[in-house]
Amino acid sequence: MSIRLYALDGCPWCEKVSDALDDAEVEYETTWVDALHSDRNEVKRVSGQRGVPVIVDADRGVTMSESANILEYVDRTLA
Image 1 (cartoon, rainbow, N blue to C red):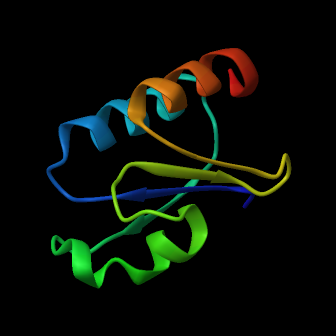
Image 2: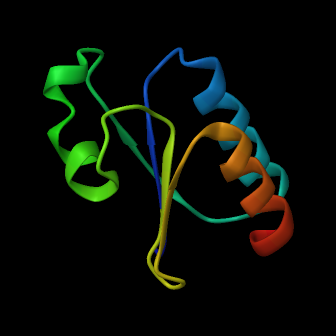
């Protein structure tokens, strides 16, 4: 699977991104992250920061954070 979403359970911005991916019928895998920022080492490794949501599109070589940017990317590129 080429799309991976890093998300935190209960995060409203993560849910918006997940809903957008679902609405666009994009297959993706979710990696659930720890609530503590200091324990989000994988997110830091892939995106350079510890915030979520983060989307990684391996096929296109895109790693993106900030939900508004991700929502626009889903709409323009993946939908």
